Amino acid sequence: MVAVTIWNEFRHEREDEAVGAVYPNGIHEVLAAALADAHDVRTATLDEPHHGLTAEVLEATDVLLWWGHEAHDEVSDAVADRVHRRVLEGMGFLPLHSSHYAKPFVRLMGTSCSLQYREDGATERLWVVDPGHPIADGLDEFVELPETEMYGEPFDVPEPDRQVFVSWFEGGEVFRSGCCYRRGNGRIFYFRPGHETYPIYHDAAVRRVLRNAVEWASPTEGAPRTFGERA
Ligand code: ZN
Image (cartoon, rainbow, N blue to C red; front, side):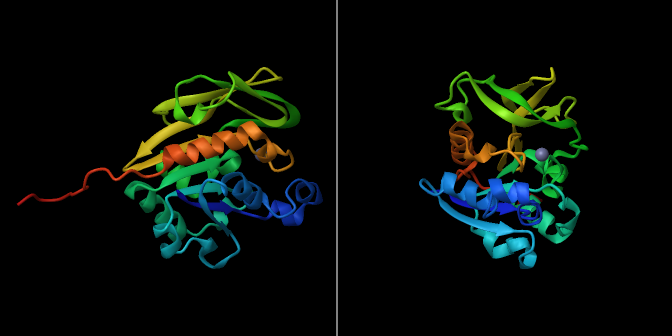
């Protein structure tokens, strides 16, 4: 079992009726339900003390999922530092959708992480471009999501180590929707789907991707990391 922490900003769901209708108990609870069968899951939200991400919680976390949107700046630098450090130590990190601007992700990437977007409820086809990758396990050749917010290239991130998904949108744009990185000992998978007004995290194929990604990003024992002068 992988020790998973799901972090959610949890503001839209409480402030906006349309979002509350899709995710009445918060996006984090729907993500938790998608993973709880296979993994040991806890949740944390922005308005808890230390955003629910104390040193103890992060120390006990193998893989951290992150959903943020309107309050990236309210995440304290101390917590962003802790997440950053834990990723370098080996914690898996899965920033979702609008978390391309999450403080820890931007730090880990070292670029602006900007992109184009249009909220028009158009169809997205999430094409598997690396069919042998473990994150694509059990999927069809593409996942079709009938109502989405478009994200378009250019996506200002470093070249991914592996590209698992590329999205096509009805409006003609494309986007690198599933990007794998290594930073230090940690594995990072950025996954695009998940706009708050559409029931994306209720979709069976999307939930499959999340379960696969948790397995992929979970830490391995590895060899010791020793630095500094050698005796
Ligand atoms: Zn969105």
